[in-house]
Image (cartoon, rainbow, N blue to C red; front, side, top):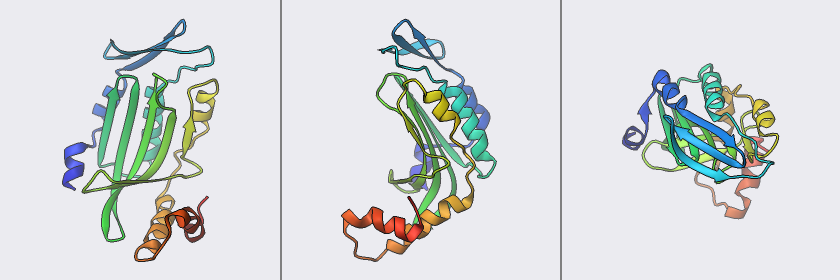
Length: 195
């Protein structure tokens, strides 16, 4: 848990939302301008196909939806140039004898370096090791082209503990087994009824 405490902040929704609200992204002609606290931190030339995405509103909305079913204990918000990301950590689980926290990740960029991404996973409590898996209701990977706002609006954060239970069970079933790396995806899909 020491790694978590040194790399994440104790949950404080008001403080997180206050910082998220300091992000502004606008398109001026064919340039996307990203500001933090009113100061320009990134500019990027884009084509007419590029769609501005309101990442601040999206983050707020998804965080509130996640909080309906999970108790958030820690968070990390990173704003680096045109990249914006937030990670939320919930309750601890044991997988293969190791401690993990349930994690929720939202990643976006306004400099064309990253697509809008939304995923869930498990974050090790002792190291920077993370297991990411997809969920049909919560996963998203969409470039910032026309339609990104529509695609983001269709993603639900209607997650429950059972969402993690299937993946954790499938991973635990592999512990101690001899498995070829090339077969891991197939085995996980069979054991956890994953897609």
